[in-house]
Image (cartoon, rainbow, N blue to C red; front, side, top):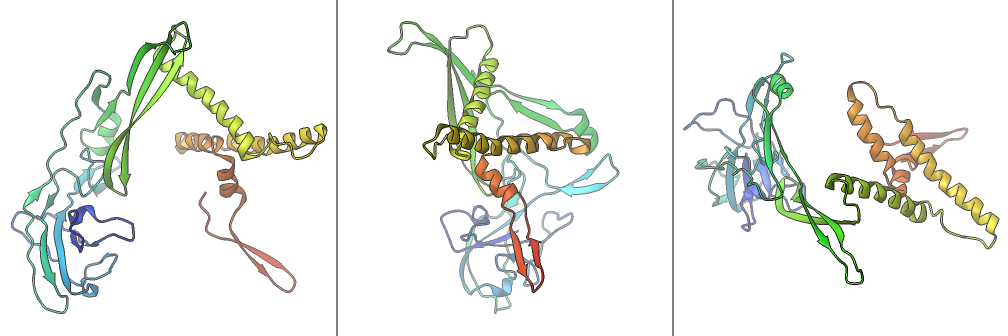
Length: 324
């Protein structure tokens, strides 16, 4: 990959994105590239957002090259594929350990001149240090028998336990203490393929239940939140809890009709099939529709974009591209 940037705030490899402010990148495939061997990128190579080096404006650029390593996998299905293995960075090519890259250099480039610019891959992205265990979190790895068989090489799965703390808390206006369970969630904030920073959210659960374990307390609270979300959707989503007229019977009828719309949405989700090869995926889709806010449901399933063509004796409805 060859990257050119007019912005010196960051390395060019961290400035490639889908945003309008993205910098220029070109790419080619190489096979078995060894030390000292060269890979040539010229005007025939495709790029983004400009398609060719020939379209580049003459001027000064910060130039950087990177080699994104692929590996060969001999699958149990008999197929052979070449893929970039995740090395702990979350499939971010510009941060993947083991990738080679060059030190950024400022150069004057003019596509109209027949000149050869040599760039050396003199740096290697170091391995990511393993996360350290703490008092409340433990990281574990285990080899997956099925994945190892499928990929034809040892594959490990990593997992970590959420950080959970518990203590006694007595509110100021109370005469007794309560059980407080605290869950800390780790949230990775990203922009495209770039990791921006790690944020932490704290969830507090206060209860007088001293019998059940922490996980049961959290699951019970989440189940209650589902009911609270349902009440909120009936109030603000389908507006079933409004009283538009002054007659009690009419308001009751309005509430029943509005609540029926929510019930139809729920039945649609429950009737979605969850069978066959993609059974687990279909189950997740059912839950997604079941918990979907009513406004989102209307935009996804009811307001289908269409082109209406009126002729002399008929009206034609053409469904446009639609991906709920």
